[in-house]
Image (cartoon, rainbow, N blue to C red; front, top):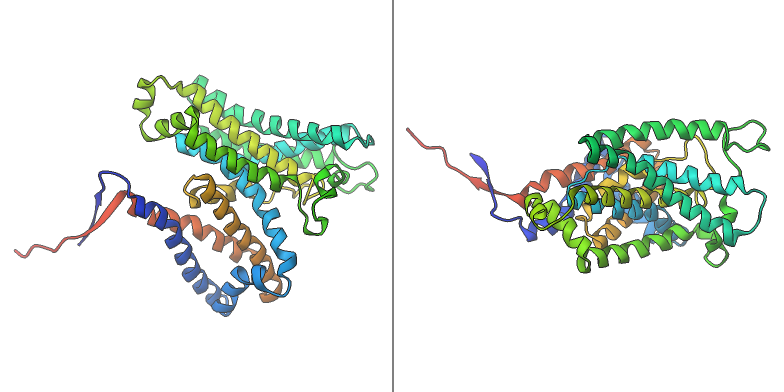
Length: 360
């Protein structure tokens, strides 16, 4: 018989091995999935993981890995603060949308002003404030009334999606767009494109993601706030005795994750997406949850996990084009990462023991 025995302390070895094991299991079972769809599993896996880096078109795909990974890393860094403290923000997708809407609204309100040195900083400011304000709704409700931040933040995603559709069809719609939904082109405001390779689609969001990783590492390892976040997540009672304000910590964690998600949305709408549209959001806020846990809530780990997830995005698009794989299969393949990570993460807290059945 097999039984699980709780470890006295979480295993450091398994903490860092389980993400690698989860990736390996995802590759194996993903290959089975592709075989069931009638595709060569080895070719499909090679297309997803190898072609974006080493094929004849890799010079085009490599910069796109940074572009795809930037919003994932930026959102996941913010989520990691809350997850470490036991504050579960599941609504980053909504904060991402509201940040994009607020940032775009500033640029469109000042159109046709061409002072990018003024407009783009304002877009950054209002994008962050938009995401922060949307995250404060579940934060304040939790602190004041004890509501569940998981449910409130998740439900607000659907409210944000309806606002996105309303803005794309209404106030933010391009008056010169002949009635089609969507705003004016906003890429002109991202001044990074003037000195970064435009062909690769690089933008300020990529730079901000790297800065967020560095800042998060410093905060979590060197600042008193990082100590309070870790303490609150590991032992809430010890945190209360040490003088940590639980309500304030909830607001800080939700506010940080909301602001970074809002920034990710703003950089996306002024960069790769280029405009506010009905289908602007592509699930980055939810995928970032996988990135955060795959990276073990550590800034450097999140950076690597974001790169891996971006690789599945780019490789998945290649596989859809070349192998005619359905988009749902690629999404299922990505979801397997979180499934297997949660499954094998049991080994971090439990030992597997074999117990022989006693003979009467």
